[in-house]
Amino acid sequence: GLVLNLFLPGKTQFIMAEMGTMFITSIILILAVLLLFWRTIRSLMWEKRISDNTNTFLNNITHEFKTPLTNIALAGNMIMRESQNGNSDKIRQYSQIILDENSKLNQQVDMVLNLTVLEDGNIPLVLNNVDIHSILSKSINCFQMPFEAINAITEIKLNAQNHHIIGDANLLENAFCNLIDNAIKYRNDSFRLNITTYNEAEDLIIEFKDNGIGIDKKYQNMVFDKFFRVPTGNLHSVKGFGIGLAYLKQIITQHHGKITLESELNAGTTFIIKLPLAKH
Image 1 (tube, helix red, strand yellow):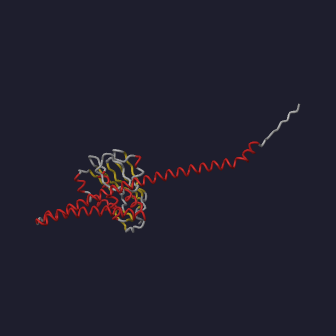
Image 2 (cartoon, helix red, strand yellow):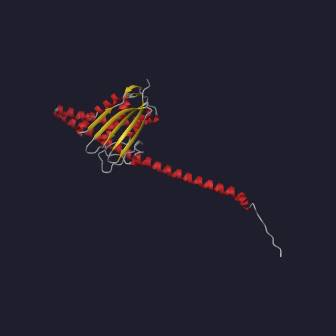
Image 3 (cartoon, rainbow, N blue to C red):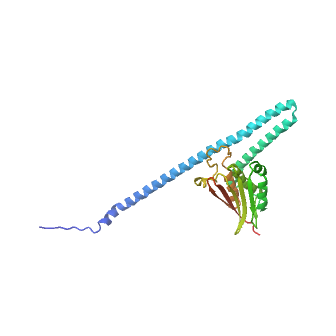
């Protein structure tokens, strides 16, 4: 008989030459589709988060504006009633209520407007050589009455030898007041606030440490996002729009600084601000 043996040494190379391009192209297309699908899902999740935060913001701002407006209307009606009786003391009292509530409305509107302007980068900073220790003292003095009302314990350690920076004194004071106000809002039964300054290389470090309810780790990366508010469970007395810390971060960023936080749930929060020192 006759045996015929056929050897194809290039079989694998032949198959790859015939199908390799199609196979590789298919893999690339599948990966591209998966990437686009992942980006689409991520975008949808981001849009949903923005929508939820916006709805929360609108609910909060409606509530915040409705209360002062209601008080102003009631005070106005009482003034009209008391003016007929000629009771000047009551009229002065109700007039002061109107002024106070009007001031609250202006502060809320200014915060919203300033945040938008800061994000656009259009706000003209009034830059001067400012003393941070002096600004901190002013910020603390603004809260003397709230501190007394809640029997607060405050410890101020202004240890920085060099505490002058180039910045806008008014905006920085607003930022510090915002942090102190947040510490009061999210306090426990006994309130303690430690404010410390010190120098680190060419920077000034400012620490605000409280013993409040703290921030859960899963929310710590989101607290500086606009409109975001940390869920507080049954604590419904805390008011706000969720823009205070976003506003604060924008101010620090405008001054070429950084702000970070360290927090533990039910153990308190420490905000750390780093600002570049003024050049001599």
